[in-house]
Figure 1 (cartoon, rainbow, N blue to C red):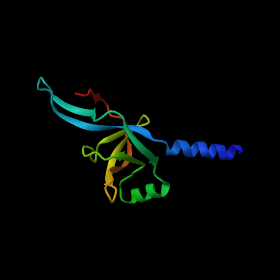
Figure 2 (figure 1 turned 135 degrees about the vertical axis):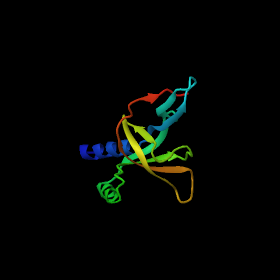
Figure 3 (figure 1 turned 120 degrees about the horizontal axis):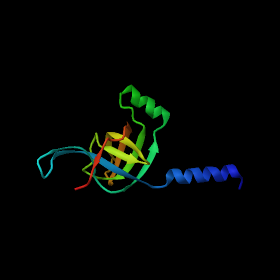
Figure 4 (figure 1 turned 180 degrees about the vertical axis):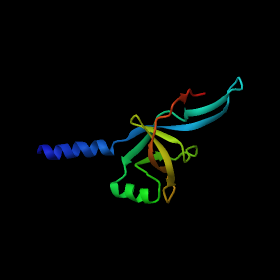
Length: 126
């Protein structure tokens, strides 16, 4: 095989490979001493996901509807993930803008997200 075919196969293999991400939720309430808690907190440990960058066409369509979505994730279905939460993926943070399930509800959760700034502080897990 020539080098171009091998490089294309390597590229596709890493593109289709499963990845891991973490969900970060907004934490609020009071601590044991009555002080208010306001910050971000990891919801879970690492989750297996499929992730890809949206095509330029989909990004432009999103801009027309003011969503600015740039990333697409497929996770195992979770009912504790909501719009506004953050996804930490490959040292970058993305804010969830849209959640969708498969039409036949086989347990996959489709998450559309946009670029987000890194949170100032992430609180320790309880």
